[in-house]
Length: 318
Length: 173
Ligand code: FES
Image (tube, rainbow over all chains, first blue to last red; front, side, top):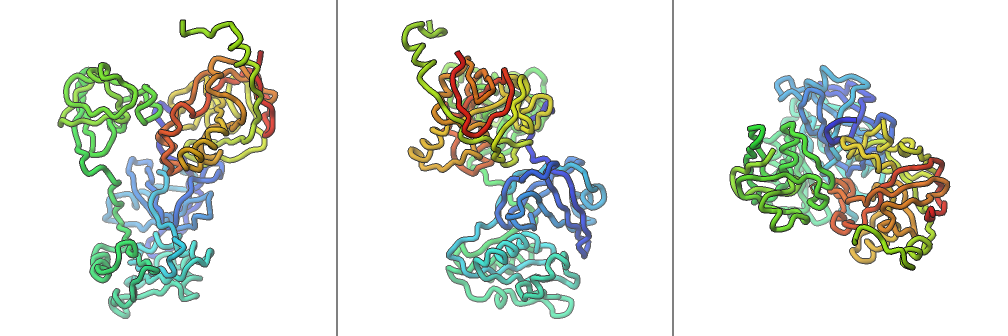
């Protein structure tokens, strides 16, 4: 039992495979091999690494495999440290907390053709999609993989390369391919998607600029920031009793900011109805979004799971 | 005045007026994992359900940082699932509400503070469950609001045993 709420899915590392070009393939599973929370093709998860880093990786197995998450990680020596930690420190049996899967493309019945453009390790988000489409035969697809020389995940891609579903372009031999020629004609029955280095994404955006937005999909290596209310602003909490200052990011709840700051507050419903997380406030302009406090109580209390602040500073009785 | 029920005919009606049935059983060993359907659950008196995330002493549930004696087993009304579909157009499966036992014909909201039989096991209802935002994240469905005040019942296990789908639920006098 922990004193903090459990906020991640507990997984253990059950497999680590070398997959070429500095890439390792990690398999994560529930400690009892229970089914894991489901995901859409192309979805990603956050890994909460033992050293405190949180990193996002695409799931590259098929959604129908519901008892494991497979991620492919390229060791980036000059990266921010997540891939190095995974490559150098993580072993079989290690426990890693992960987020619920997010994103991905729900294959739609009216889409007849998918064209995926991947640069190097950018192939990972398309792998689960390709496998899913291969099995369900729901639509045509071609995956253009652009690499300098060595193909990452060669063993995993092998059969799809043989079938001609994956076409490898080696820039060291043939130069950069013409993206416009690869994506071909647009249309409401076609979806094109791209994942790769920023320069590749830029040319892709140019090539598809005139396409309908619903037909174009882009995956960036850096996780897109979560969708937050455009009007949300960051603010600072001052804790009157302890003297601590805690920063609340735009769109973050006060509860989450307090928990991140190591302050234990009770919470239950996280939706402003149960009353568990009531905290006194002393100064500021709280925005109450709960459904239990009376106008009179709101003069002195707020519910930290849903309340916000209209002023830059909010002083709490903590 | 409002802390006791009258001793008149209404009391007898509340006690005698229903017999329910266990329709679905579910459990999960850890927070966020999909609930798995089971034909039977083993209830351990004073502790919880074997293999479930809220078994006392082995907690790995979303609320396990706040141990609660009265949350050894949780129940949910099948009627709520039917009402969600009928009134809000939301299809919620019995594996999605994250309570262990889905019953039909049992007025859960009336049972707080009472004892009742769930098959061969004896339960005491401790409090109503409260919906939790995190269920919207798991199911991807906007069910927090529609579940307010009908999110099920938390119970303590007074007498353990095996509960099966189809078991009878009835008041303990
Ligand atoms: S946690 Fe329930 S009101 Fe805040």
